Length: 120
Image 1 (cartoon, one colour):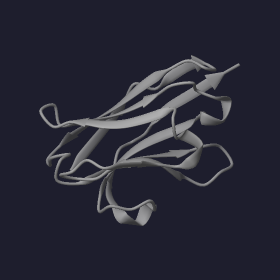
Image 2: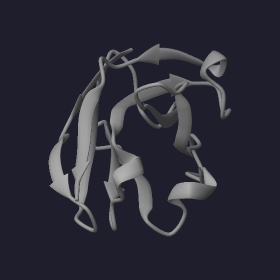
Image 3: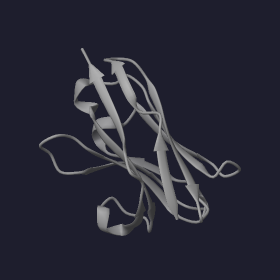
């Protein structure tokens, strides 16, 4: 499965961005899909996931109520809608596909990442 993220950029605090993850070579509905992020000086962390088939979602506490993960099976794309962005959301965001989980080791396929920078 090949994953390509897009939609990152520079946004002011409390603004919004929508990240996209276009998949090829496999269906986003047949894998658990997740977003991770890696901020400078920190370890890469889990952000959100959507399970295959039933589409159950889960989020890390710091983004609950602000971020929404979704998928469009027809477009074979997963999205991360990010609202009320904060400075601490600044990071490189990665899309991943694999088995359900909140750790990197459960995901076999990764995109190249897209930079999100939140300014004051």
